[in-house]
Length: 360
Image (cartoon, rainbow, N blue to C red; front, side, top):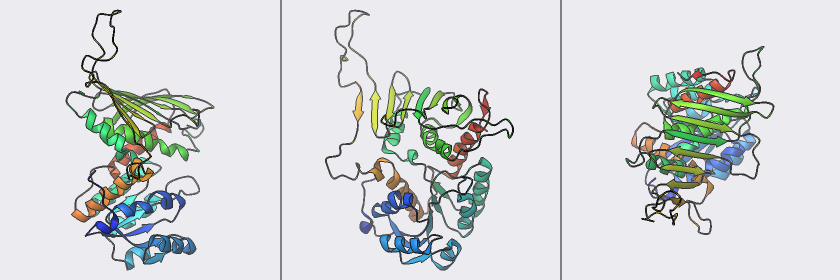
């Protein structure tokens, strides 16, 4: 990422409307505009009272309760959309995003994109037909740790990534034979979190097989990637709340890279001290400079890098989108097509376990 600039330092900004005035948007999205070339023109929410609160709090000129009125009356360059779920626990984006694209507006939207791959495919059709584009804010495409891990595994000396192991706490509800699917998967939509990180680092999955433990809902999934690499994703729903939330390790050619708890990056390389088996006197390599490297943020200084909006890639996502709109370039990361692959993985977990499932 380029050195950060504050909003007031940008000479040019995109004029945006924002659909959604909820708690997540308040904490994690509106505040990113302080660090991006964004001019918030209007906000929209079904609640006029809430929309007015957000308009005043974040400095928009107008507020609306109907997004169609907003995009019709305002001269916008793009729209941000952060919505909740319907009564069945399904994302609302497929009902709104096509209207925005048809209006000629690029869209930044929160994840998950949809409940089914078919819904994402319909949005993709509109995206391609209109020539507009969508960024789906799957954060791990923009986490500093994932970005740097990707740089490491693309180094020649790392070699081709051959395997990945991931852990993330999610609960899978039981498969229901009578309806041939699973219900109550509202929170399992968060599979986009670990899978977006794995997808970013390893590429697309070709096929998968998983086994489950009920009633805990814990899952072990085997992954076969199109590249030929293999992987494992442990969904450890009953892990201790006090433990690190997640961990990913990628193995290359005698080198490993580990992302621990989202913010700690460890690069294992080099060798231990020389000597035959059973007689090596030193565990530190002959060249100690060529050894493991460990990075993590410190929290004593007033830097932006130790703010959660940066640690979780939120500012990076918004800045990437806004600069793409300003320059007239299409986005190439965290795209709607990326979300199609993630949603196909979600669809696969709806099926019966203990069988190999092709991810078309």
